[in-house]
Amino acid sequence: MNLALDGGPDSDREELDALTRQLREQLLALEVDHVELVRLDSAPRGAKPGDVITIGSLSVTMAPFALRAVLRLVETWIERRPVRTISVAIDGDSIELQAISSADQRQLIDVFVAAHGPTPLPGSNADPSQGSGTRTVQES
Image (cartoon, rainbow, N blue to C red):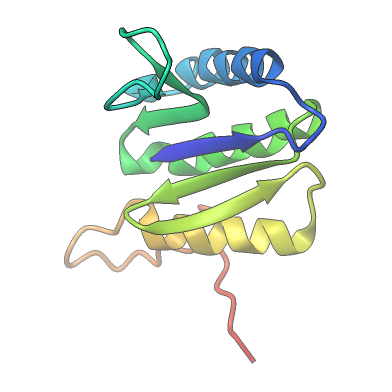
């Protein structure tokens, strides 16, 4: 999973870097395998050679069961920080979490988790939406 923080036009690079590192530390406290700063393949023109990171970007490696906990942490973390949005992307699918929590945002998170979270074992009679807080949203 990739996370991209957007501080908006009023944030600077140092602040966004510090916020990214703070979020990384919070994510590491969860049951995730790795949380790494995203590195550029090549340095931008005029930059010093070496390890160059993409400011505001994290790569999270985790088991599917940890997805809901990661999204809930991001949702509550952003409410107390000067970050406008955090984009979450998995396998080409993405969701944008905003600083103001809403019922619509929670529904989007539930749909995203249902699409990318753990799947029930074959032959299981368990409904994956029971006990996980997942709801199905029907388009009208």
